Amino acid sequence: THSTNNITNNSAYVRSALSAGPIPYQKGWAWQQVLLNRRMNYMRMQEKQETSPDGKQDKDWILMFEHQPVYTLGRGATEDYLTFLNNEADGGLEKRTRLSRKYRGEDASRLNIDRFQKHNTSGTADNPTAEQDDVDKLSNQSICKQPVLAPNGSPIY
Image (cartoon, rainbow, N blue to C red; front, side, top):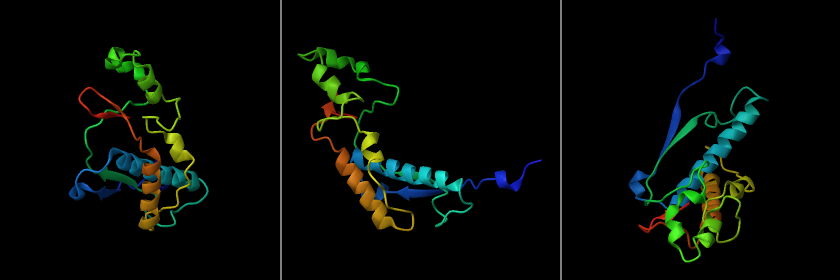
């Protein structure tokens, strides 16, 4: 027998920016992080209370947007996978350093979740202006002035 307390609502909200054309990759990444942070905060609060204050934080979101081509190094990847760097004069040392997860310099090329965790978000689904401000702040913090480029010219994050 299943209790009704274990039944979840499987609906999701959709946020589409497809009509706006391509957005910078950092902006899309920031949207993902802001919504994820809001959802995780809700899940932590859920242990303390039964309902969501605005009714929207307890839903998942589907983000629909496009960005220019990029390469991303996932959580399991390292800069060592980028064998084209071996052809650099220094063996790719400078670019590998900038792509390293451990490197936090101003010229770091990898988008850093630590920048987000230090950023206190204020936006909610019912306060889209504050939510947009959070996205703008995070995406501006994440901008790399000179990303490492793949041989085809696409940035690597």
